[in-house]
Image 1 (cartoon, one colour):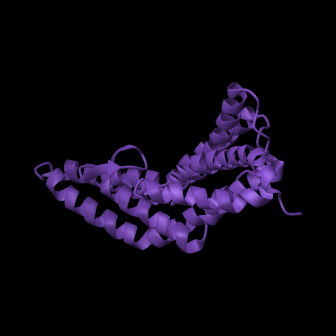
Image 2: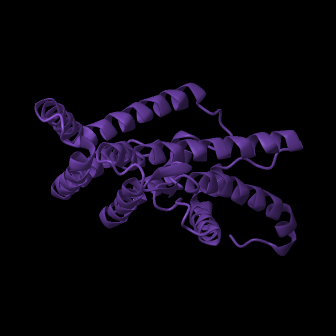
Length: 259
């Protein structure tokens, strides 16, 4: 049934408010999503993706969105709720993505590369060059395997399980974040496990050598071997580490709200 021109002034406020609610949830999530929400992605690109996704989702979801409330306080509460849902979904996806650079951060200290530091936007502070390099490699793997589409699909499906205007599940959100953090930290230690074992054996060997040959300068002998041996071990295990991380990320991202 075609719309009458006289009805457009009455419908435009409702359409605009519905589109705003979509932009709030999608934009908040895109700030944190792995790959799409990286600091290297220009703000104009993020805004364009947000508006494009909102435009795609608006036709099927608009009938289920709440109408503009009468009071500004109620409108602000709706906007805040949509932003909270978006940040929750994006944060869950970001937490599991941080497991790989977190493991590389451990490796940087174990391999004696902690002095080669630079600003890492993923952590919001200074990190090791190794963590930054492999973290960017993990983002490439996300795009190559198509895992970056799972959070976007979760955003589209979140309106089915978390309708706009409904109460925010604070208890379930807090529990999900705690589980995601525990899973990410455990995965990081799992990825760094072989290097921790190798570092313990290497340090024990150095301790024995220092007792057997007291005149040997242990530091000058150990550091080149530690760096070279660690990088060689990383070259051997990196493909397997990325495979394990990708499988774990697929499980976690596949369990996001809305999927």
